[in-house]
Length: 122
Length: 110
Image (cartoon, rainbow over all chains, first blue to last red; front, side, top):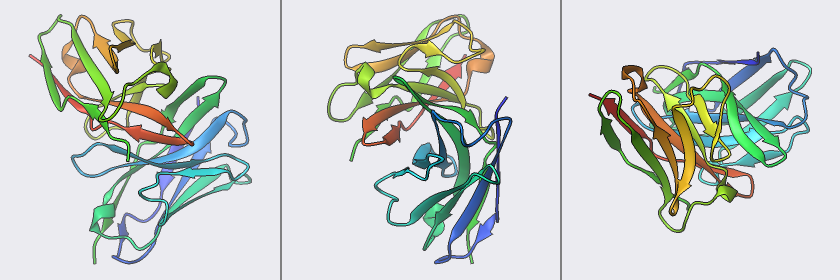
């Protein structure tokens, strides 16, 4: 059973960089057929896909966030990370990491982390 | 910018059937969008219900079913139960590696 766990600061100051890490257990991040994704949820709102990364480093980002977002992977630690630069209060959200299945004609998010609340405030 | 539409709220009686839909502000949803559906109880992460239009995720009861109805993806819940009362999100693959979630439907069972 694959498990994902987000970690990182729960409070970030405006204009700084938000950084989160997702640790994967029960499976290798090197496994082919999967991307590793980030999605966020503003308080009381819906889900917003941020982007995902393959173990090789290939990334795809939400166009509306692309200029401020970087997703990276550390296969030696079985982790992947999210950085959002120049944050404002609008980046306050629960951030979820999830595994994305990318197999032959099968595409969806199957395993999700518990989520990490990040508040942007001075 | 692609906008995915869902009913903001829906109500169903216990034991009843409800169909939630997932559309595009411009255009029609087809299987090539690989629609998937996620259930979320407030305070918890999403749970995957259906993917690739109509394939149930492991452990999901067969009273949840996905389909294409007209120009939208649909999630039908038959025999609604009290613990089905939560939020439902659809997601569509819009190409170039990009996914878009709908705004979600808040389902009330009463």
